[in-house]
Length: 336
Length: 225
Image (cartoon, rainbow over all chains, first blue to last red; front, side, top):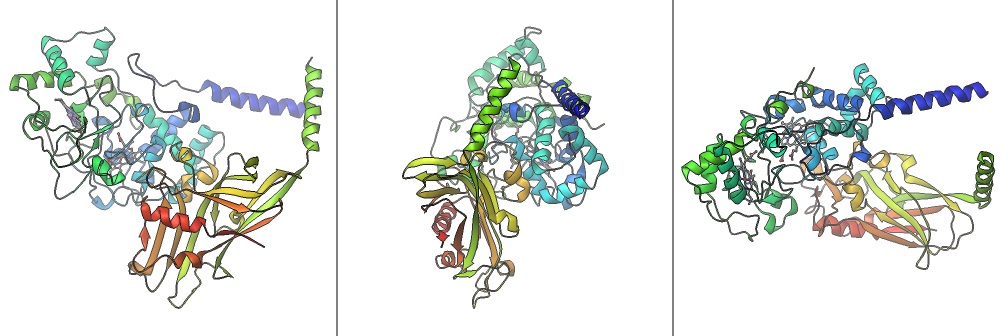
């Protein structure tokens, strides 16, 4: 009898020990603020990150087995979708928005261009079930994973038993995506006193601080808020951003402020991918700001920004040092 | 020292044991015009049927006057007509407490709505979480009626929303004077007296109509003698 206790205790503590030891700290650059994601409810572990990564690259999540998350979020493009202004899903159905890059998600509390999603864990449900993306449903996905020996094992290694639930699936998806931290660009090295600005980059930085930083705020270059940067409405899409979710007039044409990191890899730009080049983006800010009759706020650009052609080049030089090569070429994030 | 602790805790557990606990059952009983509601069965001359009836019951508690006498922890239950077992909630409640009302929420509170992926009845695999816009569906009613102009005459009410001004969660309070097994009926026919299916047949996102229909449903919960 007593022996059994010892064996069981041994097993339990062995398992606990295993789980303890494999907890991973999110690598978080010193000049970044505290992450917003609550890791206490979903502690990072090697096995779970691997499970999430495997799922991310697996078309098993789509109804016809053709589309994975990576189809639209490519690791070679900072997990954005290039060459398409609007994303393509199953049966080549075209969505209504440009797939954003995925990085530094632990510092975000709102997701999607219109902020329709309020938690990273729940984000994956949207592409999995959207008819223009993967066209699937959670019960169906769980059934296909249940039928796979590989996934039964991966779930076992992640959770200590091989039961597959919606919660476990979603938590694992978050785990992998949370590890996509981009914080090692030249800008970051400068912030950590390991590098210095060139004269032009410094000029660009100063211009950025005056004209752009209220929305694209350092060090993540987002402000966790919505804004209108004066884009005209595309009459074929009639996308009103946050206003379409909240149905509040003040929110019309407000879109989530995207990061300015890794722009070299993530063209085209804006929620509908209307700009191919960064210079076009700057030309928009200086020449094409549209004002609509919606209640104004500090977050709504209402006049053209004043920048000379040289100043634009300076800003572009600054934006270039926000490209994080180490992140884009990180093999850890790729499918093996 | 160690053994003193063990004795202490053993005693405490005896004391806890001594306060006896009774198990009671709350059964939800959907009705249609005083008849037990059956899924997919024609209910009136419009061949109206109900094919799905699912809702969240949460935050169950008993009050004595305005004094809280018992509340369930982690109180979230998905009641689904397609799953017999889910229609009966078992509660372990201390014996001989005085009560004057049974209270619960129809829906899921806002905290659970923004807490990420949850387990058990709150697991999004139950189809009660909106995918493209965060938030739980508090009540799902689907069915058909000849008067419904939608494809295949199907009406769908997915009621939810946790952000002002369209908060669909409703508080329900039912008078009672004894803690015992309770049947709670909901006469769905009364809901359709207030909805014109030919006009309102698809609600799939948080909005004012979702709130008013939720209020109506909340008013239909009744203790059945």
